[in-house]
Length: 346
Image 1 (cartoon, helix red, strand yellow):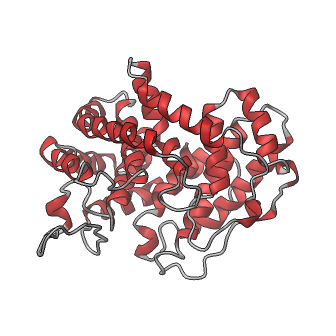
Image 2: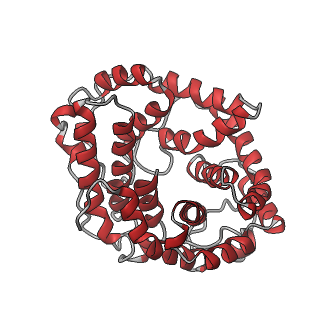
């Protein structure tokens, strides 16, 4: 599949198929992966929809949140390329207070650990996507989602002071990605007079990542990564550091980008078995790397040779993943389209 630098054009071309995947996913309750701590015999959810009546589809909670985010993003970005009426009807039926109240009860469960931080951050990204959309129905959805977002913000504020170290591997608990997905919501509420979450995210990112040098990215990838530990960290710091500071930070963090080194970070990964729930994560690694490389390139000054290398890497990784977004086993199909939309639109 050919891909030039018209990322928006590619999104328009693929948006309809991605929307169809997401619409099917948010209604598909089974198969389902349910994580639950039993406190007594028989203490187990009857079925996913009974416990989480909004985000019950797409195999697991966070993937269902991702699919809802995808649909809102497509409505905003390319409304004429998707079945807008069908999407609005589906989201309008889901974003109702009774169901979302049950979601709040679920996410704030007895251990306070459910979906931390990956699902939390995607839910805040969903909230931000609706809240910043100048659309009457979108604003109605944002109002319905606001209590859930507020509870998730409180969970972040309770967790981050206790988190002594970041998680640096390439799956769900990766700290840099979680902070990056939550950051736009934190910035938005800070501008409205509630800066605590933004301050906490910024302070933690600087403390954890601000002094990193010579990152050993030649060791990537691991066998079930869908995120790059190196690139998610760089993407987060590109969002937080002033432009000149980021240019210097990147120079000591990954000092050979202009030479496309280390090669492992610039070479798309192969996926030997797309039906294996863990091995198939590697499709997501290609997509998330492309997204990170694009964000890094945008943050570099005009004429910086690293930007050219970053964009070339983004194109290569996008070409590797695009054929599999809608033509894959359900182990891939229940989540990969969200990363494709992130890659092509953000």
